[in-house]
Image (cartoon, rainbow, N blue to C red; front, side, top):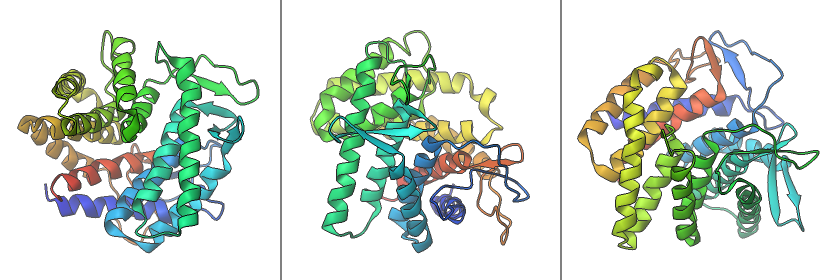
Length: 332
């Protein structure tokens, strides 16, 4: 697959998201393929964060003005939903009256990508956003203290600050990715990931694209440290997850988001192993993914990724990241 085709598809998706940021900084959450808005009263701030993350990653490469302006608006909306507690050094992301482990993780990734993507910025802005990122990181440990040792992903109700019974399979992987990004948390990242393996993935591994990306980063850092034991561990755990992905491959082909998420994770596995069989599948699945993108120019939904006639923002966000990660494979 041509890397530039992948990049252009990612740019078109990011432009769609940028064109669907409202004046208050929210995304138009869902549309039908004809462009009409679907308003069911729901808005997921975690997916809002994921879109910022994807758009900033595109803009780091493409540097497109309208995408930058749109992400600035969306970031302001994000910050308005961060609650500072305990002396204002702990930040918790409020999603419809609930604080979520995955919410803090994705908000951190969104703010981190903002700092990463800007070519230049004033020192005062840099310090302010770094402080926001630090607050969100501190907030993660409010959840981790509750979740360990089981690594189940509780949601905390805003009004009572008590855990709910809801469990998400993917929140732990999102946290692992944030920890892996932080250079001073190498040992903590290892401990957290091993805890996931011993608990959530003890019997059957979750097909967790977030965790695969965390394992890739940890593998890279272990290489720098010449920590061959952890490098081997990352590949072994990644291979277990890949076995589950390939075992169930026909169950999620034909759907946009499950396809895009698996591709994101498979790229991480390929980068650790250089496995050519995995690469062939990545390229085959990317070709399938592109069929979900609307390429009718001059339409409200140009560049969007659609599943069953509906375009929700996270459908496009995950597709963008899988395409962009493929582009980066060949753009060193």
